[in-house]
Image 1 (cartoon, helix red, strand yellow):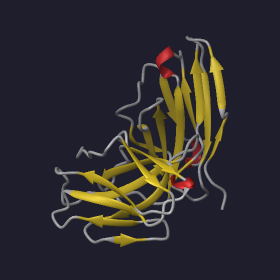
Image 2: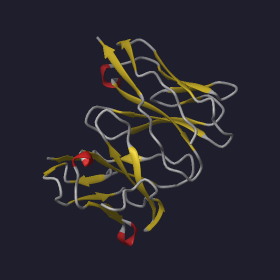
Image 3: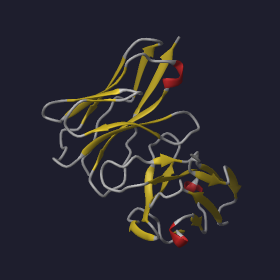
Image 4: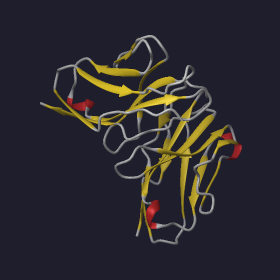
Length: 109
Length: 115
């Protein structure tokens, strides 16, 4: 499995943008980049995914490097409810999600 | 739309006892997954079903864990006998499509404590 590297933790102020980095230097051409997050005492929830182009949805934006060896999840205005563990996952077609340890995001008022 | 339902939410057992967890996926979702999440770690895939067939159970400790998905809908995960290291949250997820793009929907999980 291709691996991802994320910082263990990050901190942000409320209402400021947050950029969560992910390195995946061994990504293959067919791997999709998925982001999930896990709020305390809940199951993970889908945030966004992409292959090559940058993606936007109501929750976040995903910026993918041109060589696809890294990506960044962007939360445009962090709220206290965004405090969670964020997982960056490479997904082979036909395979399940393999989670790493993720980045624990702390949002302070 | 109803989400993924799991029960029980909490279970405490003694080591060497058995336990079973139940999952009802989102209606119409063909793919069902069981994950184990130990405190401080990310979820680890135990088994993946497509309808009622097993797609991947390579990380399922088959000497003590078993899972079934009869009729391609509900699923049960059983542990017998339980060990201390089985203390974890057991997460069930489902998706409507396989492949690399299908979104997984997770339940709230079943927290197991083995004493």
